Image (cartoon, rainbow, N blue to C red; front, side, top):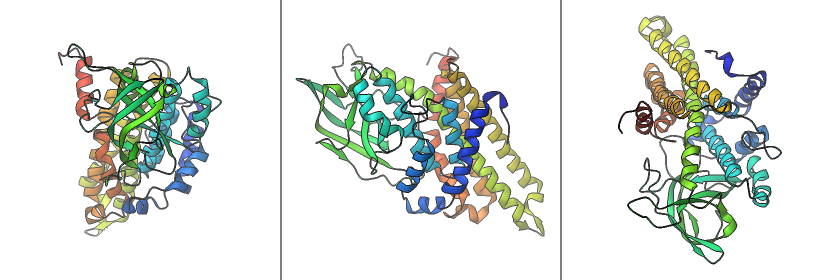
Length: 388
């Protein structure tokens, strides 16, 4: 493993060992079958909750009050085996952090929602993406209009993680709360909407290429009435808050990419060491060993970029460029590592029961979620002063 000791304290390293043991003892067994069956496992979620994975970024006393490096270490270790669980943990942890931030001036709401959310007993999903949105995240048609002391919400969201499980309780919903003026977008606000509110419909689960044992649904809102206290933060500032959230949330996705690449490396090392071809171990062929070395180089690159960005964020330094670079490079390299792993394993790399195939399926979304590779290139280019 390529080391970056400057990035971690002893507490970070102890946490990493704890999560690694959890992955080996609890997560690894059954990961293949969960993916094949597209089965979300509530017992596994409860175990992750007991580990403390969901409240890492929640402020004390409700959560651990930990830093982003702590979340990244958890995402990395879990993704070496099960990216579906990693994204389940990631979305809940960052949504809890966002809720705590947006509701910081609403102590009654914090006390009501945060303890169970930080424990992983209640899920909060992140409702931004719409059918007409995608990379154009600000293209929001969902609307919220005032009606006396209430808000009435209409619209739909898609690709919403953790929205249809037995733990799913709320969605942080971004909706337009005004009219477009002078060609500008309508102001966008954030709301905490109960998923069991009248008028909320959780659509059928998506059949996904990867992250198959995670939970993802569309959400529909038909005259959903919520009280004025459901507005999170200041009216009209929701989109700005969402963009700030998405910026640092790219770093744990880079960590998941690192974990997946690590999983590809360990699985491929095992395969080429055990497999014989033409009378000698497959690893004895230079063409094979060089490709394994490329995966190791990808792992090293991902680790440095990811924890450089996380280290800077935890110190309050600007990370817009670092987060974009880490997310872009790590997600692209994870896809290359997964391709190489499946290629070297031949027919075994095409069978769903194998880790290589699972990593290959899971890697594809990494260049899309939390901002596509194209969006990251756009951000990097703008940082260079290019007129985009």
